[in-house]
Length: 233
Image (cartoon, rainbow, N blue to C red; front, side, top):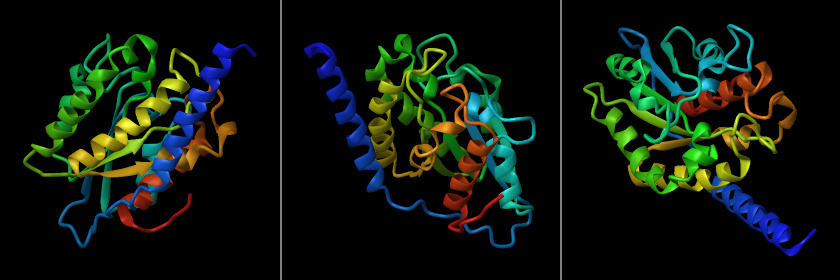
């Protein structure tokens, strides 16, 4: 191993350890009290292909499992669009999708954002300086809704090296602290999907999209954050 390669390995390890250290200090997410609502609590799940359900068999994506865990007092809506980015640069920003407007039109009570893996593609991540401002603006677009939803942002699932589809594991390690930074600035809760899935590399057949078992872990992690209760499928 030459010095340049060794330096790259050490740098990646340092960033990974930093991200894990931050994760270990995250406060528990504030749960939502469903009480006895006149109508089900509207949950908008916003994201890209993992939210849409890619990698899982039909009916077993994380939003399907989340609905099953939460039960009749909640109504989970899937606004996932494969290939989209949180940042406005690039060919497929989520902002330009019909699903983005549909999620706003729902006037949700709860918003779960699991978006940003596609931002790690080198052509998009080259604009990483724009990430914090775009993320803040994205969150603010939901804060400004008349329904005043409770907003949760997810620390993204791991990308198993070497990644795939251009989705880059090293760039993800740079993105995770930015998610933490934005969540703190915006005073919203984080859901640590990254930590929940990190021990389960075998659940990513294509290195990026979790299978049914991985989707179930995301669902349980999100459900526990929303309810403050542990559950299983």
